[in-house]
Structures are given as C-alpha cells and as structure tokens.
Image 1 (cartoon, each protein chain N blue to C red):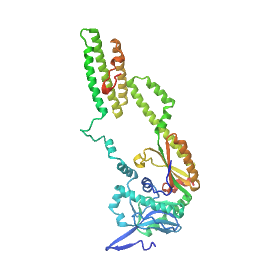
Image 2 (image 1 turned 180 degrees about the vertical axis):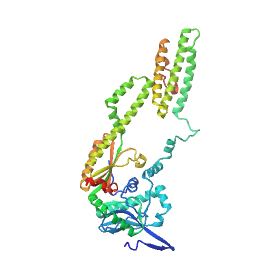
Image 3 (image 1 turned 45 degrees about the horizontal axis):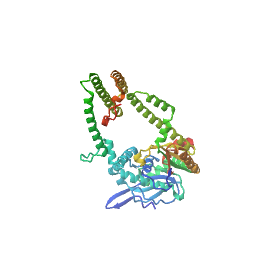
Image 4 (image 1 turned 30 degrees about the vertical axis):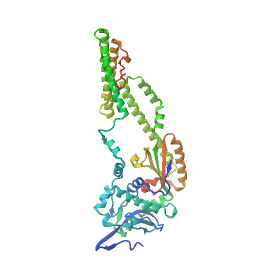
Length: 289
Length: 179
C-alpha cells in the first residue's frame, strides 16, 4: 500500500517530492492507524523494519523545508498548537492499538526523512537501541500527577501557630510604632518564605510516596496559572513510569494522599496512560531495569 | 481531585509539553525546529492575559474624567470640609491673648500636633518606599530609629506642656486619627 504513496508525482508540470514524517517506533502490530497525518489530510501508514515498525505519514518536502514553515514553527502559536496536537493524536492511536496500551517510542516533533531508504537506514542504525528501549517500556505506562495549592490560608495558619512566629509577634507588639511596621513587614515575608518551605517539604513527600509505586519518576516544569487555566497555583508536576500491574496501587496511593493532604490545601489531578515521552532515553534508566 | 478519562482529548499544554520538548530524538533529513517550549508558554500567557490585566501590569488604567463620584468619595469630601471648619473654631479657642499660660499650651498643642502630623506623613512615605524597594536596609534602620527618636522628643514636650495623647488626637479626615 505504501509503494504508490511515496515518490514523485507530476502535478501542474512541477516535480513534487514527498518526505516521510516520523511519529513513533513500535513493535510490529500491523494494526492500521486511522488518525490523519501532520498535514491534516495524508494517511498514516506503517513502515516495517525487521520486527519493528515506524509510524509515518507523507509530507510535501518543499512545503516543510520552506522558510515559511520554519518561521511558523518559531512564531505562529496556532500552527504549533495544531501540529503538536496532530502529532500527539497519531502517537496516542499507535499506543492504544488492540484496545490495550502497547509500548511505543514517541519521537520528538518535526523529524522528516527524504526517502524510504533514509528512514530504513536510520531505524537500522538505532535498531538495538530501539529494541532495548521497547523491551524496557513493555508493560509500563507514563502517568502524570499535578498538585495544586487550593488554600494557602491553611498552611499560613499552621505557620502562624509555630512558636517562632508567636515570639516575633510578641516582640513586635511592644515595639514603637514606626519600628514595628518594618518588623511586621519582615515577619510577613518570613511567614511567606516559611510557607514556600512547607510546600517544598509536602510536595517532596508526595513525590516520593508516589515514586515508591513507580518504576521511576521525574519532576516536570511548574506551569503558571495562565497556562493551567486554574486559580490555584501548581506546586508539583510529577511524571512517572509505572508497571501496568501497579497502576491500580498507584491510583489508590494518589487517593490516599489526596485525602491526607486535603486539609493542608493540596489538590490532586492525575492523567494517563501517556505515550512515554519522558522516558525515551534508555541509558538513563539502565540502572533501574 | 480530578482524573482525566483515559481517552479524553489531550489538552494543548500537555501536547506542547510532551511533543515539543520530550520524546526520542533521531536525526532526520529535515527537522522542523519549533520554538523553545518556554517561549511558546510566554506567547500563550500573553494571549491569556486579558486587556485589563495587561493595563494593571503596565500601571495604566482607563480614566473617565466626567464619571459620577462614588458615595465613599462624597463622604470623604464632606469630612474634609468639616475638619477645616473645626480647625478654624479650635484656633480661636486655643489662642487667647488674655490667658497667656493657656495660650502657650494651646500653641504647643498646635505645634506638636503639626509635628506628629508631619511624622505620620513621613512614615507613610517611608512605607511606600520600602514597598517599592527603593531604600537600603541601613536606610530603613536609620528611618526607624529617627521615628523612634522623634517619638521620644514628642513625649518630652507633652510632659513639659502637660499634654496628654488624647489632646493630640485630632481627627484629620483622610489621615485618620493622629495618635
């Protein structure tokens, strides 16, 4: 089926050469992918190499090699939005074939090959690396856990009750007015930095408690409110690679932590399974295997 | 607590975070290089920031010169007028040439009230500057001590002229009570 798809088509007299956009590598599943490709119209197909297959779709080389596209990728948020979601949709479907999740190696955005030979050579070059990584990822899932602080007051109350702060407050109460202002200001800052320290301690506690149920875990970027669209600030963005058989335990642990931390103002949100975007560098996880 | 449905549509931020920044890297013949994900986030935040928020951030606001005054603003103006009236009456009762001792006390009261008023205003300015961060620690320290010294001096003068805190406790409209 792919033979006719790649190559040179004569349209309006000019040569139009197609390239191949690479989404991910997986073990041969032979299940077709119905999601449209990165250009929004081309079919996604499977390009086999030994027991692996590359999930690819055709893209017009001329267009993707153009200044225009390179510039859009740098500046045009709508273009970036649309394309990154199209890329992700294909990888998602490749991962979820046969109603289960199976191991895939998701590629980072924007890798295009000029010919079938080139892609074959690249897969061959990385063959053992891909094989090892897929073996490692087999039976594991990526899950994300985001924690938000919904109630800063709860933490503030805890801190205001500690002996240090109480002692400072007593000192300030007997200070002359002009001076007291400066100390009150200082104390407010002290309370706020202590809140940050408490948040650090609690989120680390949460991170480690969940790591126990995972193969490995990493901390991602803390995203601003404008990006999350939430009023509450994000305090932890953790990503885990979990054995599929441990997923239920992992979820139970989130529920337990959520109940425990609720009073302190922490809110949990989790999502998965994701293609293992965060765990594609085999050498980093060798020791854990 | 929320959990995404297992096949719920991927949110934009999740897609950006994973697809642009993460994933395996192999060298292709052609690479579409997307802007750094942090730069994309900055761009998205700019879009998410509403106009009014942007104005707030840039310190600008929309001014309508002919808008209706609020009830609080009208009350504020009325109280200012009252205070001026009260002060005019006070001056004539405080300074009476026929009673030199009481006049002296009255004058001291006015001067002290003025000193305390100025001190208050300076304190407010200091607070503003501290909030703006335009004062060094040593300057803050010096100012704090200056205000303390000034308080001591005022205390002495009050003793000399037999004045109590309440005597200086004039209501000064927008500045509130002095003491």
